[in-house]
Amino acid sequence: MAQKRGVISKERTERQLAREQRREFEEELAAHYEQQLGKPRDRRRLIFVGVLLLVILLAGGYIILTLLPAPATAPTPGIAVGQPAPDFSLPVYGGSGGPTISLKALRGHPVVINFWSESCEPCRREVPLLQRTYEQYGAQGAFVLLGINQADPKEDIASFGRAFKVTYPLLFDAGGSVNAAYHVTAIPTTYFIDRQGIVRAVAITELNEQSLRQGLADIGVKLP
Picture (cartoon, rainbow, N blue to C red):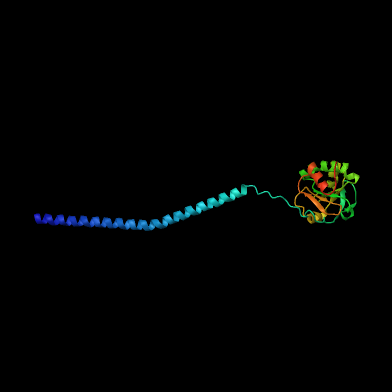
């Protein structure tokens, strides 16, 4: 009987040992598969997070660049100081004179050419100064002042001249050939040309009394 109990106990021990070995094997196998399966999952997760961060950074950079103001660049004159002013002949649509005016015919006179537009607020603000200076000195022969318009209809140019009581010639540059010849990229733009037809000063901004006086002085017109 004791022998039988010993056999049973031995069998139980062997079964228990087998279960423990099987459990250890299963745990090792599960750990192995978990490790093998976890690596690609972690790699995929890292790749996804990296791509997501890259997209966020690129989108943020694009938004910042879009919202930031573009760096200001000063327009440069197409005809540099010291170069001959391109000749032209244009019809007079407002002010005085006409029916056409040629720059070549004005050789021997200091000439101020003002490129403008009816819808340009800085142009409108500087017209009273131009008109007042022309009335006081230009009309007496000190210099010739020409306003050149490219964009507005004939009627608008004429009405603009009447509204501001302009007495200097307002010319129309049909097709913009004169604007192109002078490389006008911003208005108002004003060229100061001496008696020999050479550009001596350029103002690519709204004129004030000081800048107008300086431009006239550069072409030999000394105002009191």
